[in-house]
Amino acid sequence: MERHLDRIWLVTALDEARAGLAEGGVPIGAALYGADGTLWGRGRNRRVQDGDPSAHAETAAFRAAGRQRSYRGTTMVTTLSPCWYCSGLVRQFGISRVVIGEAVTFHGGHDWLAEHGVEVVVLDDPECVALMREFTARNPALWNEDIGA
Amino acid sequence: MERHLDRIWLVTALDEARAGLAEGGVPIGAALYGADGTLWGRGRNRRVQDGDPSAHAETAAFRAAGRQRSYRGTTMVTTLSPCWYCSGLVRQFGISRVVIGEAVTFHGGHDWLAEHGVEVVVLDDPECVALMREFTARNPALWNEDIGA
Image (cartoon, rainbow over all chains, first blue to last red; front, side, top):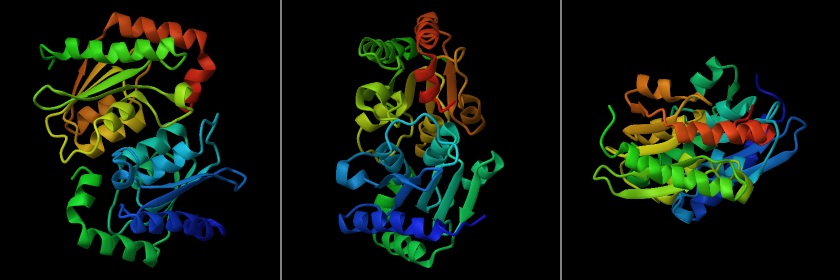
């Protein structure tokens, strides 16, 4: 269920995505919030910037949060439906909620997460959709590389 | 089906795992081999060494391989059954084979990978088992942290 802060938190992820676009990267951003609403970590896709294919946005935010004993009650906010890699991250570490900007331009593993007890909220945010539509139209090869397609 | 080179490739992953143990880290290693048998990347769990919770062995090997256009025909060799995070990596990027040292001390997502068309080989290697048995007995909290348990 959508919570009051979800759309505010999405702005953090969107800021990361826009910064990635400005750097010539894949414009996907994410942020990991603790159970008490504090920002644990934020990040963006860095495939182009760092030449790092593992640096998907959710992984970057998770990494930025450093070592943690438990992810109970945490929320991963991401501009785009998480791929299998990042969905696996959420499931393995027991991240409780995933808030997704949009799942129109890419449909990852979020249904699977919901089946396995993760609370999934899809916000259908038009800015997130527009960002990816424009990016994928202009950079189809880079986008396919980023999702192994 | 096990191939001739699988146990030789496992030695690369085991070397990484042992190096991790010597550094005080989680002793899991992995290596990614191209379709032609060349070593694309190798790595080990670096949670302790780098304070990076995303640095599971398979992710480290994948990262070390850099940007690639296709993972068709590649083999990920790992000393331990891959967790959901690293299983998601294999599925998302279309890594064709996963060769696993052991799945006794931890059973991750390799059955799910096999269901989704990945060729999975479990070698039941006694050295891999011994390494993890000793490590988890001595460092239960660190191990639980590494798998979000």
